[in-house]
Amino acid sequence: MHSKSHNLSPFPSLPHSALETFSSTMASQTQPEAPSKNVGPEYRPTTQKPLATVSTALKHENVHVLPQTPQLIALLTMIRDKNTGRADFIFHSNRIIRLLVEEGLNHLPVLEHTITTPVGRTYAGVKFEGKICGVSIMRAGEAMEQGLRECCRSVRIGKILIQRDEETAKPKLYYDKLPEDIATRWVLLLDPMLATGGSALMAVQVLKDRGVPEDHILFLNLIASPEGAKNFAEQYPKVRVVTAFIDMGLNEKNYIVPGLGDFGDRFYTM
Ligand code: PRP
Ligand code: URA
Image (cartoon, rainbow, N blue to C red):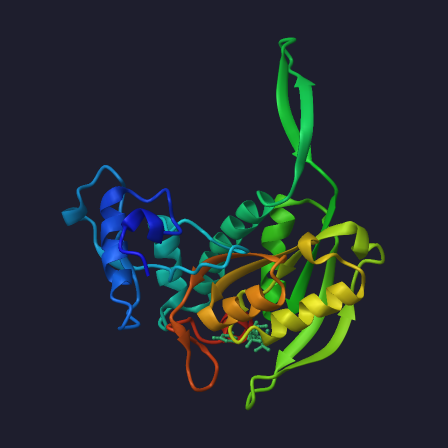
């Protein structure tokens, strides 16, 4: 582990004071302590910004963590809280999902596109190159479909039903229904929780078996464990992962900690 703060942070946009807090916490490598930073608007002095737990930093090149902004941390605080009811859980999850989709789209290639404005001037812009589709890992991944549709009207969405065994946490594939021409599309794979990584890895294999190149898959995820992110990065280094947060780890039941519990239950049935 380096001791210089500018080498440590995956969040280059953080103010220097935040980096100091972040790096000093991360430097104590012997204790697997959650990293923290002072959270609040940049114009506020550090002493007026509360200290909050932020995402663990990982070195995998294909894993992109959303900037740990006050807004994101507040939204995550809401959905992690066991006392948050279903309506608030859905509302605040949807806001994070929207951030993930918007950031995910930044990872797709664009082409030059120059247009003429109503006042007769040209503007040198860009447009997306190629076709996309979403693929949700049922059930929890379906919760992310609305956020994708809000950004990409009439986007095609495929489904893969994978369920973890409640005892062993091993994934089982039950069903898939994917667009016929999926091999020619960029695929946004949707699942809010990456725990052991078993389900997402299985879903990527289904996509690859259907001819989707690994580097045309983008995995959008709310919370990942370091183990899941590592498994993913090692097995499919060309799949880009966009996540809101890398948590501390897994518990004895392979649930993410501190996590938020069972996403599917909290979104659909609790
Ligand atoms: C959850 C979650 C992921 C998977 C993550 O789904 O939505 O798909 O577990 O765990 P893993 O990384 O260890 O595979 P679950 O199978 O519980 O089904 P659900 O979507 O119906 O809740
Ligand atoms: N699935 C969830 O919904 N939550 C976890 O923590 C792990 C798997």
